[in-house]
Length: 164
Length: 164
Image 1 (cartoon, rainbow over the protein chains, first blue to last red):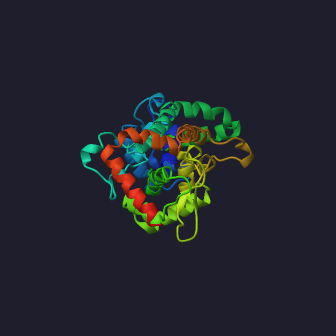
Image 2: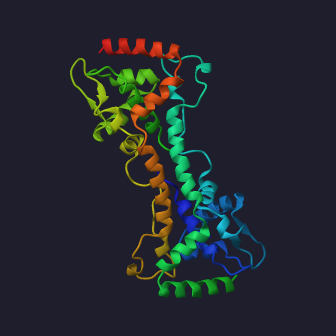
Image 3: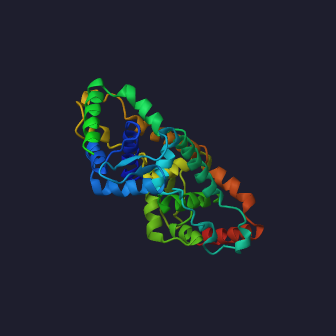
């Protein structure tokens, strides 16, 4: 089972948008440049993030993307679900109802307990993801990033914003 | 993100093997018949379960599959990993190291905190799956299954074993 790369990309990109100066935006091409990602695929993911109400785009010559709400209100689960949807990873096909010993539909009043066990595990996973916000990601990353990299990123960002 | 159907099939099939009489086995074709599953795909999954040491096959005219150990010692996580491997669903591609502001490799001494947050959530999911054994699945299912279905399954199983 593999999560799509779009989830990884989107979390990184949202963490970049979380550190933009108040009221400023970043064009998609610049976001892609910062992480060396292909623009067309990233555009598709940003459309999904936009539909989910996580990012906003502004039009005009200085137009670009910004977070649609405070980074403390955007969780890793929000980003995952924007990209991958809300359907569980485990899909119950009710195979207990198949085969030669199956009985009438009314004899299966509750969900298959295999499915409920699998979904309980997914609920624990989702609960962990819902506890981590994009602002948490930025705060946790900060002590991991060297001063050299921070200075380079600040300089890049100033130039990227100025060129909008 | 979607789990392969093989996980669902394998959990159901292991729960059938868990109720076989002591010392008896069931041929793959019979296991497939019980759930109306395609034999070739199921065979592939049983090969994976066998490699992981979860089921055993006996040769000879009465040969077939049985659990390789007590059902209390086979968890949903064991079955998941037998089929899907142990690689995490979230794969970190280190995109923090990409782009124009990247620094030397030595400046990234610890794992990206986005990856560690995603993996922490997967650990919570795995922990839940590890707590549910195949014997738990059987015990939890029992009160959900009608007496009519239980009788039909017992009769089918007696005939299936006898025909080995």
